[in-house]
Amino acid sequence: MNRRMLLTMLWLLPALGLARSHHAENDHAQWRGEIAAFETADRARPPPPGAVLFIGSSSIRLWTSLAGDFPERHTINRGFGGSEIDDATHFADRIVAPYRPSAIVMYAGDNDIADGDSPQHVLEDFQAFVRTARAAVPGVPIAFLAIKPSVARQSLLPRIRAANSKIQAWAASQQGVSYLDVFTPMLGRDGQPDPKWFGADGLHMNRRGYALWIGIVKPWLDALKQ
Image (cartoon, rainbow, N blue to C red; front, side):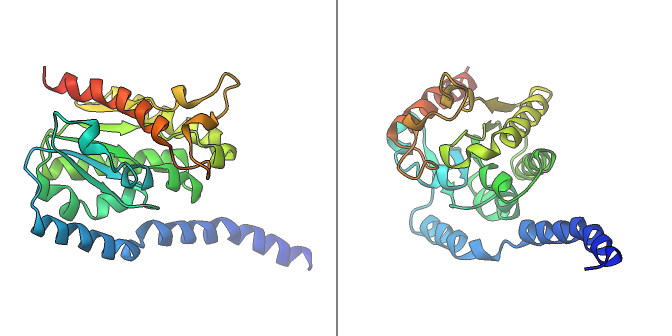
């Protein structure tokens, strides 16, 4: 390969990467079946208005004990595994607006980072979700569960920390937007992900991990009543 060809390829790489990322972040078709299944379930058993909406990726989808974990609240689980923040935004007219939730708890960003999104991109996608959700439900309180430090994605820790830091700082400047730090308590004494919170795959949480999250989400929900 001559020098001119090499330089041309190096010049094109960033553009190709951007094109791939742009396509990936806007290709929401893969979730249509799951969104349609939510709507079918809603028609069969309409959720009560004013429930707490839990939305996001597989850490929400697998949180099947929500009703028992927050017995004093009506809850709706709208997690779809593998999804990213902008997927929730894209389908907000179907899985946010109809519920008129009293509060929203989001866990997403994990897959975004794994798919190559920058921390700034993750922040901007969360900001877009907040705008979209509040266009449908003005002033709804929204909590962002920090991107967890999983064993399986330990190599992504620097970018996860950066994304969390950006979201935490932005949330602190907003009315009714909260950053719930599940990241820090999931680290071991060595500052690395603690396996005790995770299942065999090192990515999804075990019951102990969800118990930790409950202890962080519940005070936030309780404070909304005051």
